[in-house]
Length: 431
Image (cartoon, rainbow, N blue to C red; front, top):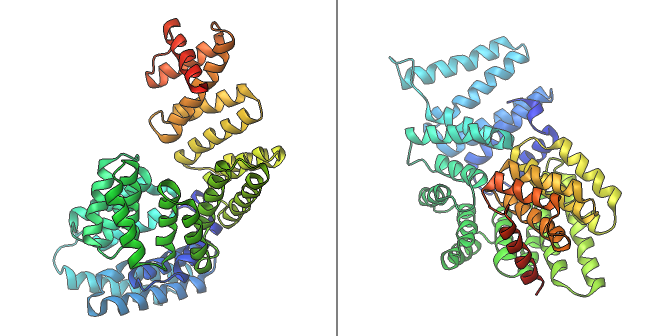
């Protein structure tokens, strides 16, 4: 894993938060200490890396007792790696000998056995390091499930990475989330991920049952509360969501995710209010939590884009442009870049810079016409074209926009008859 593929400081902060929010999941915490050791190695803090590996070994032995040999392969390999780089070659050999003993005990004859836990730990490490590695992580989880299809850890990991990468209506992601819950019946976070997907498909009864079950079983788990808050913001009570997220913030004050969810709640409250003073108050509350989220996680691209859009709305155009430019230079994965194009298009549209707005909406649409952000950009482009055509039905720029949409999506609006349909739709929207 390459240091330049992630913001190593932000990654360290997230790992330390996961470690500090230890909720009795010793196996997961041991994995976190392994990842922390690697980050400390990258930062040149070898002694701290060594301490994290020792803690990982200790937690693994406490969790699995005499059956921990295979689960320690990765940790012992990391010990050997670290001691080698510390030029402690005798200690390096000692851990290599431990690995040799495990191998001989497990497979005295074969030298080509694939160890499931090595593949599984590789999957988790890739998944947690950066979004850029999600594809590799997905492949590792798929491979390890072929070896151990009933293992809860691998089913959960595969479900989460599919949730992060598959479209909202993906049957594959929903099926795997159901499978993961079967093999991890006490994992309430998985229940909430499934609830969010089911709600998008209007399957509210089952989604509501999952949310109530998760909240009842894990009322103080900040990882659970944050997703309950997200669910309520989207499909229930914004005020209740704010109340729950504030409670979660008491437990995890440095969670960028929770600050982000609170910012979105206050933004939604702002949009519901007609009173100008109250609307401005909630906009400033939203801005403050977006700022906190970005401060805690400087790679939180979507939060940066949303913050910039609110700065623009608040009349802080210079700050908005500065944040957007920072986000564009920081973004590494396709999903984040596409989201930025959408928000940057909105920013330019709000600033009355229509040519740049059209340019960024087009870039967003080209990156993925079937994604949520791509579809939104397509809608915004059609509205811009409709507005121009309402003033001049032969406007060549507007017709060019519609032709571009047709080329990218197959949405046919290039004929005069279709353009008239756009005008009719626009009039209906105004009514």
